Image (cartoon, rainbow, N blue to C red; front, top):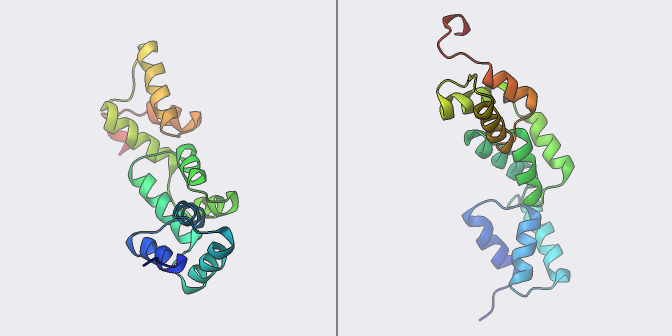
Length: 152
């Protein structure tokens, strides 16, 4: 007995949130045609089962918890099929201090983020850039002295 596209979509969304793009891709892989998928997705959005804005907020919070920077988060959101407007709106709603997040990531990784060795400093910069932080945020993070009592 085969399932309808709606049943498959609702079963997927019952487990966790997905973007509209991800659900469409999963339904296409299951052999459903685009003509039957679009009305199902519209119905899921109308019912509140599928919401790209809610999914973007969830994804943003998840990546912030992991200590990822804005660049990496935006890339991950785009890979999930979220449009640029949805990504920008989610970032605008966020209250995250990206400079402090970069600092906490550097302190967690290196205990004392400051170093005089240029090779080591370049390695730390590459690491933080890979995490999605801008150079200004990285400079702020690597200038932090965890033993300076005036910074508390």
